Image 1 (cartoon, one colour):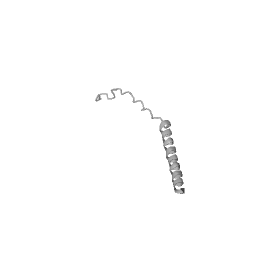
Image 2: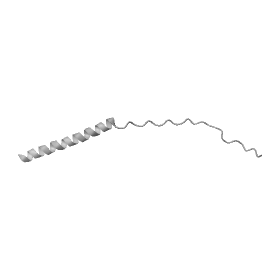
Image 3: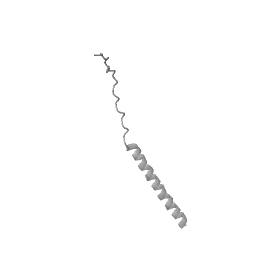
Image 4: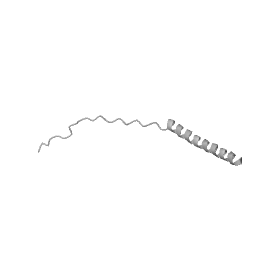
Length: 56
């Protein structure tokens, strides 16, 4: 009889620990860090930066 009682207590305590761990993980997953928005890429503009050499 005490063996069954001890196994029941250990099983219920273990189940409670696992349930609490999973609950904390679920809370972290739902209220965790928001995904960072991707930074806006600058608009590419073609600009003439090279001028022909005059030779003077």
